[in-house]
Image (tube, rainbow, N blue to C red; front, side):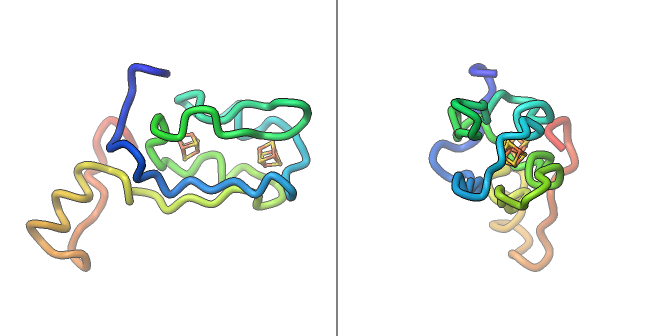
Length: 96
Ligand code: SF4
Ligand code: SF4
């Protein structure tokens, strides 16, 4: 989904390509087409499209993906400014 964007360059998405077994689950569950299977390995093809929902990491059978939900979320970032990091939570909007 190229039209969807969070803040550029802040996604916490991380992929351990060596651990990936190419099952395709991450590609299947990602709502924004961030991950694609290429030559039997997952690849991040659109990191700035990641909304940090965590679905890929949750469904990866070998824990090859890590992501910290909400770090790149604009609602979360604004809350850390207003309420402080301890009190901030994900906004729970349409993105999550
Ligand atoms: S965290 Fe969500 S949006 Fe980001 S790559 Fe994983 S499934 Fe896609
Ligand atoms: S879910 Fe995990 S093992 Fe499967 S393709 Fe994605 S990164 Fe690789």
